Length: 159
Image 1 (cartoon, helix red, strand yellow):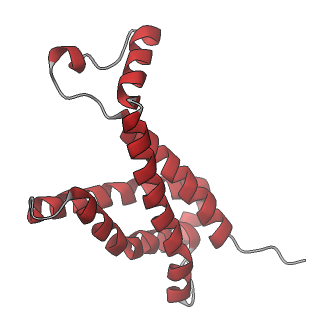
Image 2 (image 1 turned 90 degrees about the vertical axis):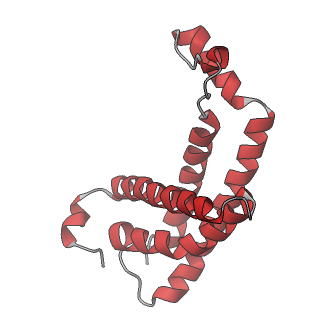
């Protein structure tokens, strides 16, 4: 059961995307607040991992309330969906490192400058550069999560 029956009038793909965006905002806000609280006593990667593990039930509850409907029983559904978040975290970590190593930000920026006369002028002016890696990782992990969530949460058709 969804939080409200009127949500059924919004296509599942749209609900998934909107709740995914909201979930990212909530996650990043909480993660940054936690990072600020612990200061430099723990590494960013450690704080990210621990916060992400504790955030999985929150993200799952949002998905249940607005996208898939509340499962009965809840705990087995949470446990079957938790690997989606954990593998998305691993995929995001791998992609971030890989794209950073291949200077993805500079490559995209150079492409935008040469192809469309746009891009980040900050490399020349000494300001902070845009982080295209984060956008690419967010898209990749979003697609990953969408595909796996559909596989796990879509009821099987009975013949």
